[in-house]
Length: 112
Length: 115
Image 1 (cartoon, each protein chain N blue to C red):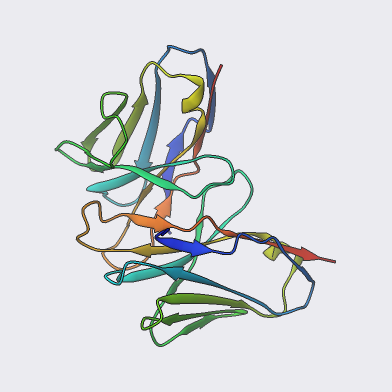
Image 2: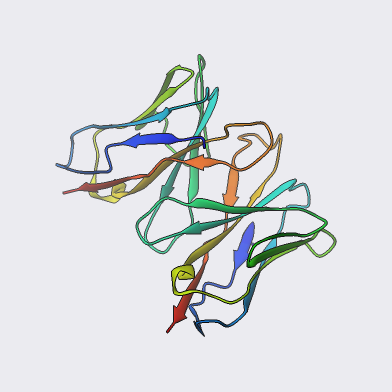
């Protein structure tokens, strides 16, 4: 079983739509959670951290469900510039490398 | 915000040669840096953790003699791909965590092509 699983998509949605995608993680010891955005042939850039209480940043809302071990990202009023690959990332502290485990990403295409 | 500078952005080299990739934290000290590799349409895979002043910690399956990591100062880590082969062609990215809490900052990545 993959450690972090995401639907690769692509998700094709019209501009202005609301879109959501989920991610599941297998390691119950995961402590920190993030959504990153990666544009084609570029480095990942932090979109937002994900907290148990849920958090919002403008048009983006992230939710964490520890019991079910999944994380979600909701994008409202989508823009053309939101087209990218969204990476779900978890971190297990003290698991050896203390690095991050990445999902393969969900490819989002916003259509005009 | 915190910046991690990575060079070169891309490199094309002949099979059998060695390539060095540099990663610098510009406005913070990074006692730990992480090196990742990403093949097309694949997720980033952690290769190794670079620790300032000590040996790097390699992930299972990553050859430490092939991917040499040096973290000589609090702001610089280098990854050298030795005797590169075409299968080493990939996107290599470094990252660091500017603060104890919060996200990671990534370098801009190095696209390595071995011909």
